[in-house]
Length: 311
Ligand code: NAD
View (cartoon, rainbow, N blue to C red):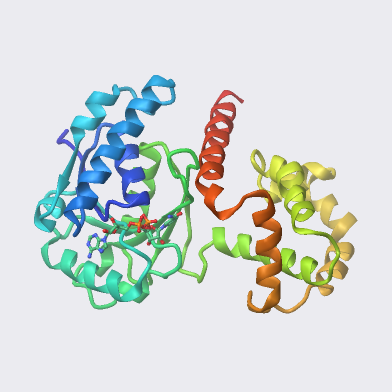
């Protein structure tokens, strides 16, 4: 079988993660960026991360760090990155004009069989692909940060995406050890953000109503619901909480409906409450300690992903 290649456009936070994930599965990785300095930094950072992961016995895949590093090369020529790629994964900043421009450039040189995949968090794929000649190959593959430890990928087709492309994209994510979920159609916020925003809106309203403070709201997730949700989905949780989902609905449908009637209509996150929530968050994690806390989060997620593999 010929060597599989991924072309990554944009060597920032997410581009680097993709490079490491695909190299771990033995793919050739070509990492393109408009900033030469950024590519150099990305390659050095990837090398250091892979070496550290190997030392701590956390490296993914069946080949060692040096072999993985050898599969990853930087590129300043878009053609070199796009040529012969099975999949292009675009990771440029979240700016619609930029995404439209970059995809137009890639489309002009891509082969008709290459999957054109975007990491975008917020743009449905029809927004940046309607004028592409290869628009049947467009798809969104949206990760949750950090994808090296949080495996879910939302695979989102545009209205004109060939269903075979959606299937092949899902198979690629499975092959490299991620956990794809396939949307049948594009929808604003995809799924991760739709679920996340329901919780965020409710947290915002609870602070506004003065029901409990920021720390206690967060504890409800980190010391409560989140512990379950790390292993079970929302629906399976209900299935286990009663004698199956049918009984759960019989027991709780009225309550869920009554409580849901109490939810407020969404409001924009602006005004003095933004500063109030920020003040409470910063009393625990000041802005100059964010990176330290992110490192702690990544370590915790690493340990959780190890535990999940053992279960
Ligand atoms: P980033 O700012 O860390 O990296 C972006 C990179 O793109 C930079 O290296 C920049 O030099 C490069 N770039 C800019 N213009 C370019 C061009 N024309 N051609 C090639 N490269 C170019 O951004 P990120 O956090 O890695 O995010 C990338 C994408 O991933 C965004 O669409 C974002 O929404 C999505 N995403 C990010 C996260 C996250 O937590 N960071 C999570 C999920 C999805």
